[in-house]
Image (cartoon, rainbow, N blue to C red; front, side, top):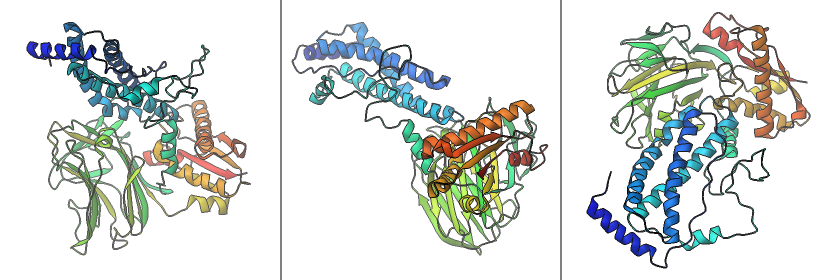
Length: 519
């Protein structure tokens, strides 16, 4: 938006006045543009555009420091830059979802560069406004921070193998997130999926446009293909509309995992727009006949709305009727992974690596909630969408640590990888954490890590992939949990040792596994 001409004259007058005063302090130290790209197009574009605008504002800030007045065209450039900066800043959360599927280190590098770009944006927005209003003035500490010292600088760029620079890929000490921060988050993630697969559906066996074959509903829905991220099931919004996977007789201890994807959500999305995960005593199109419990996840974007926990037993309102304060707006927009663990009465729910719900007596009566249902409501028809995929229900109850210690080996299909790659999905780190605890408890234990795949692809490709995945698990134990690599061996067996039928989705999920065997 352009300033009126009389406003420009007033601003120019104040700028000239400001430049002629002695209160201008030295310009802040320049934030360095990353030399190398991340390899994720949206991230690289965001970083480059952020620094292109930053360079413009920094140049005019230099004029202010030197006492050089701005011309009318300079002010026009600053006005346009300010509009672009605001729009670019608002787009930052949208690119976070593109980090899903990248390796841990690539996610860390991307996060580092995004935060450096955001730091440049924050400086640029603040500075452009001050320049336009004739209020640009540094604090003494900025000048002091720029003076030479014998302390090594942390505001440096990543190293270049073709130069003599000793710079590293670290940011200033006030940078909010870096690679080790991400690894620390993963290292504390304590969700552990069950060990016996009860149900799995990624909709890969369904035709696009059809209702999924392993689900039921009293309304409508269809499987859609979205870009290169596979098949998803679109849920339809409506009062009294339920979507029920063919999961029967849930045990006392089990886990539920799935991914959700949203489209069209924004500032106009209703505060009552919600995604509900229901545990029920029947497979009918209602919440339940006598017993049910549910968690309601908000998707509205104009405010931070609470998660809701409700339970009902013996046709009466239960003991739990709670609103749990949380701001999950960014997560909702960026393809979050939902993990639920039910251990007898205890109920826990994670969104990505953060645990939001942990209620010790949420399930007030055991062995009555046998089914899982999904429901969404108050989405704008044709504008706001929610999709689900990779629904996995597993029976729990086995402590992998105790089993590994007592039996000398353990097999799990809970360590997940991106399709066709050795990139470990973040939600898998709960299992790797348990394995690390065994190794830390007894320093004499050595393990052979064996990767297995399903039968999709060629024998040679699967053999190589299974070995790469075993190596990735080893590196996670070494890099995150500081296990000596001399205690770990790896092996890949590809598709040669299946434990289930490779012609079904469930069978393939069971065959994609990692074994740990004491040496």
